[in-house]
Image 1 (cartoon, rainbow, N blue to C red):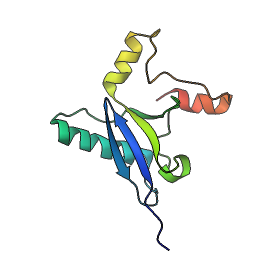
Image 2 (cartoon, helix red, strand yellow):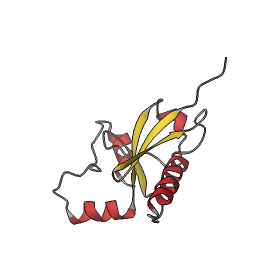
Image 3 (cartoon, rainbow, N blue to C red):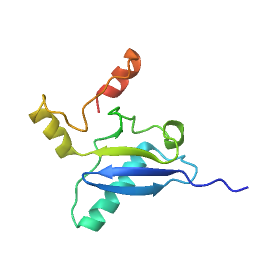
Image 4 (cartoon, rainbow, N blue to C red):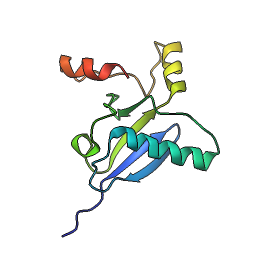
Length: 115
């Protein structure tokens, strides 16, 4: 019986790209790179490299960890770009989709708080 491909929905700015990851053995960084490549291609721009990837609850992911260990099929993640970081720093009191949300686990929160 063939295993179906892991599907992750990757958001960049106001666009979403479905990335099929096979068994998901790639790194989170790869997922962001694939989505950035697609964004650059379809929008004829270069947005640079990902500064981070966040879950829909705002938790930062570790870029060198494996997709299949942290993301279930059909997950949604958001790529953080350099300009997103600048917006966060300029408006510390604003409610950004990239605001950090603590999980309640102090050790994990320290791990994810910094990009």
